[in-house]
Image (cartoon, rainbow, N blue to C red; front, side, top):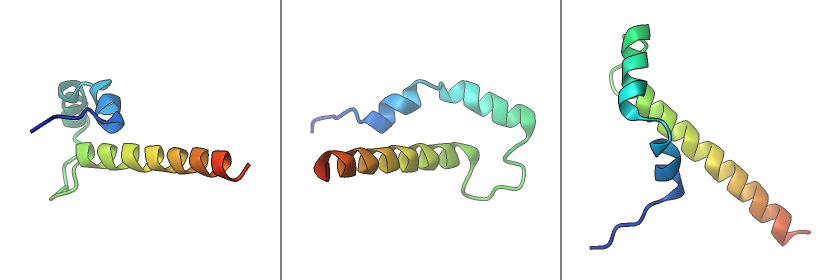
Length: 64
């Protein structure tokens, strides 16, 4: 089975998860969280931003 490194994975590797988790713990940000914790929210937001800009780029190149 081959392994592919995605752009999203490269973006997330720029921010070490251990440091992120330490910040979350210090701020007590996941205090009332049951499932959708801060890390998942960050990943979801990164994905949506990437998809938005990719679609904008695609629409500009195709329709210009």
